[in-house]
Length: 116
Image (cartoon, rainbow, N blue to C red; front, side, top):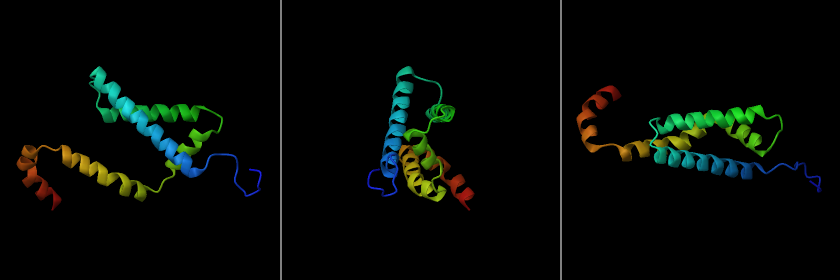
């Protein structure tokens, strides 16, 4: 930039993080909507895996360095403990919220035995 403050002309890291997260969430929502409308026999998690692999392959095939590549690199190098602390509670809550009471009631003994 013009002030000589050491920053380059690339986007700010926090802006990249928000744009990339928004892009990924929009892709996930679009994939869910398309899969529901087409009554896809492929599970949503498998579709998300394939979408992520496709986005990664496209990003790695380009030779230019743009904001998307920079944002992907930033998320690829995220601390794994932070990733678990952010996403694991939401995943556990979603699984517990969508669980059937009757199945839990039937399987609670085995689950407690396996938990030790």
